[in-house]
Each structure stands twice: as C-alpha cells, then as structure tokens.
Length: 115
Image (cartoon, rainbow, N blue to C red):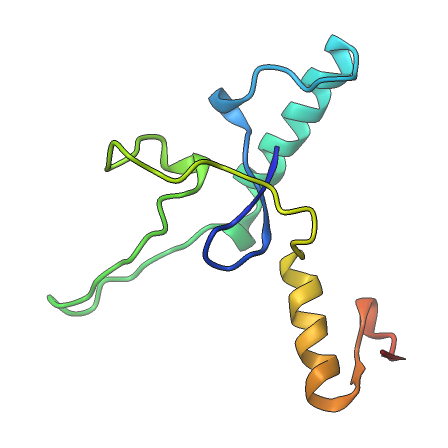
C-alpha cells in the first residue's frame, strides 16, 4: 500500500479504492476498516485536493498520473510500482533540508531540536 514515488523518492500511499481488496496479515474486518479509513483520509483531505480557477486562455494544469485517484492510465506502459525501504516521507525530507540549511529544525508541533 506504500510505494516510493519514482521522481521525488518520497513514500506515497498507493492502493485504496478499487486498487486494493484486502490487506494481508489482518482479519477481514480489520482489513476493511483500514481500507475504509485510508480511503476516507485521502478522499476527504482537502490538503490533498486541488481547486483551479482558470484566469487566462493559456492556463495549464499538469498532473502526475501516477496516483491511484487518476483512475485510468493515459499510456499503456508505465513503471512498475516499488518500495525503496530507505525512502523518506515528504515530512522527513522537509525536516532534513531544514537541518542541512541551519542545523536545527522546528520539528513536529513547533518543538525545536538539533540534528
């Protein structure tokens, strides 16, 4: 359910909705509850949605079609989904950049810490 995005190298949720039927190593009830929560998290999270206001005739929207929400692929050949166990989340990458830039980070919930 988690894959590594081939361009960013970040971990990404891959597998909700029609793409996953069951989660291994849990009961059927647990699997359905987890899948339902993940689907709601992604579909109901406004931070993951885009609202566009077209202002000019030349406005353009570029979409990375690797997400499962795209529904249909526009090309018949695509890279195989994979998980790099060393890949980082988007937050981990952001915090690492902060540490590299100034030696400390605001961390989670504004708590300062040193690397």
